Structure formats: C-alpha cells, structure tokens
Amino acid sequence: MLLIQFAIWKPLRPISRLRRGLAIWCALALLAGLLGCGGQPATQSPPPAKKGYFGTEPSHATYLPRSDSYCASAVTSNPWEPRPDNDQANHTVVSAQHGWSIENYWTRWRDKRAKVTGNFTGTTTEIIQWAACKWGIDEDTIRAAAVLESYWQMSTIGDVCGPEGEGSYGLLQIKNEDCSGSVIHGGYPHTTQSTALNVDWYGAHIRSCYDGDFYDGGDWLYHRQTVDQIASQSGWDTVFWTCIGAHFSGDWSPGQPYELRVRQILANRTWESSGF
Image 1 (cartoon, rainbow, N blue to C red):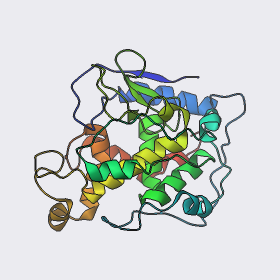
Image 2: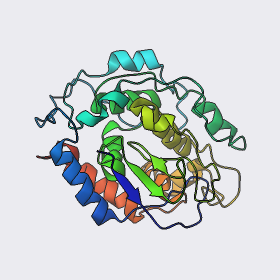
Image 3: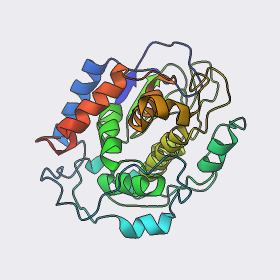
C-alpha cells in the first residue's frame, strides 16, 4: 500500500519542509503498521539485545564519515523487520547520480553530501544503525525521527502539492522540490527507491548541521553564531536537538514542538512497542 499524505502549501526555507496533519497521518500509519502492508506478515517480536551501539560523536569529529565498509561490518545483525513492504528498498543500492540540488554555497555540506552513497542493504533497523555509524548520529534518535516522519514506511510521500517530484519522500522525508517546482534537496526518485540512501542523506545533513557547516555569519541557520558559540552558552545537547528540529522547520528554534515529539518517541521507544 502506498501511504500518501497531503498538505497545504506555504513558502519554504532552504531546509524546511511542509508538514502533514499529524493525527490523521498517525492513524493511517498505525493502520499500515498493524497490517504489515505486505504479502508476508510483519515480524512483531522485539529486536534482539544490542551487541553494539552508535551514539552521537563530537561536533567537528575529523574521523567522520566512517567508511561504508567499516560500518557494514559493525552493524549488529538483526532480522527483525516490522515493515516487510520496505524489503525492496532495503535491498536496493542505486547509481551514484542522485540528482541532488546544487547547494554550492555551503561547501562543507556539499562535500559531506558527496559521500552519501546508500551503499548498504539489510533490515530497516540495520540500515539505520549503518547510517548512525557512518555519520556519528545517535541511532535511536534516527529511529525515533523515522517514526515521526514515516512510521518507518519507505513508501511515505509527504508535502504533496503538485506534480510528481514536488514532495518529501521515504523513511525520513527528504524534500525534493517545493510547490513551485524549485529544487530543495533533490534526490528524487532515488530517495524513494533506496532506504539506505534516504537514511544516509539524513545522517549527513544532521552531521553537517551539528558541525556548523551552514554558518555564514548571517541570520540563517544559526542566527549569526557559530555552533561552538551556541554550545558554550547552551550546551552541545541543545545544538544537536535543534538540528533535529531544523530538519522539520528549516530554522533555528530550540525546543520547537517537532523536536519535543521526537524526544518523546525516543523516551517511549515507540518502534519497540507492541503492534508497531
């Protein structure tokens, strides 16, 4: 089943994305999750005990991204798959030409994005751990964000306002074009075809935000401060979580509702709940 969400158009900032009616979406997503959305039954048993865990690495860490092969070997084997419909996208590695937006202005972000490959296959949770390893972003935070964004359904399409391609796609809702047809992040249709590419891009983008790659001295994104200055005043945890929120809003707004929802999902570990 293709889960499609519709929204009313409004102008977008460089990394902002229009959002859906959360209550309606959650009901549809929950139904999709309960039904498994596929020809084979969803695996409802909880994931096995962790053998390894990847948390958030320090801002400006020079050893990131870790290599695709290193992280592939470091992933904890986990056959648990609550979304059987993700199987094809979970086992698809697409070509190197992903059609990303130009975004030449932020050269450090562009350099990180050039290392987004999606070169991994596995279950949905294994793919999330692989991207967390590669970019040094807490793996359970990515799992929680994916619950809010798509309820772990790769077929999710959000921010729909026009022709094909004008929307947000996949597990973490990568915005391709806005309602005027202007490219925001690009990547379509590959971000719908490969779960690993979708999550790889998200990890790179959060890492770039956390490293301060979008700083140019202006109001956007960090309100004329470096991430180090923000951290000295409010702590690195604030920087990290505001970057999580910026994926939704495209702005620097500590404590915004989206961020708080992800925090709550993380605290509840919703992806491990019965019926997920």
